[in-house]
Picture 1 (cartoon, helix red, strand yellow):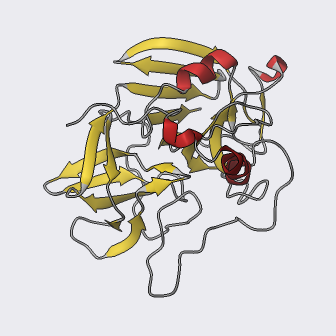
Picture 2: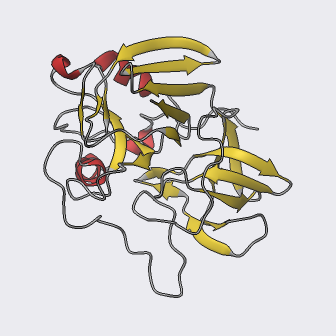
Length: 264
């Protein structure tokens, strides 16, 4: 097993910054705007092609996470190339997991292992969707970090090596656009050169349960900063988690694929 995967604010996340600003706004829609008319989904290709397991797609034929409150052991994997995703080990492929997500490397957490196979959380809808991928062709690492968001207390806590290293008051989803609960993971890091409202946007592998699309994107939930401190401790967002500058700085050091547990 190798060392930790890339950190959220790694070099790959800072390339093509103007494009990343557009990507950040279209993916999360966190900067404001209105509910759009479409999910902005990337085409899955022709009828002969399998859908891609990305934040833009819905994979209804794959199993859901059976332990949405579990932290896991921190094992994460990165496919060197596109790999097939099956509902069961050895079953026909239902989708494909690409090696990159949102201009960065794909790292997903392992929730179950069998000889030759890894069951991983996927970044697609519905929230908590999982799939089995072959163990061959994967880079395996372990994240010592984990993130917990308590929606009731409106608090984010960061752990490293099982020990708490920081806790902050944050803004969470409003009653009509709640932040979804369950186990997800840090999907990508978007660091625009000219940030609109946050120097870093960290999408996770979960989506709004009430908005099919927002701001032109697929309603992906993300961690990001906010110009006004007055929002922290309140339920006022469209589903994203707004965090203070100190929390964002710490989250920037968290490896991609790290488990994020969101509770009521």
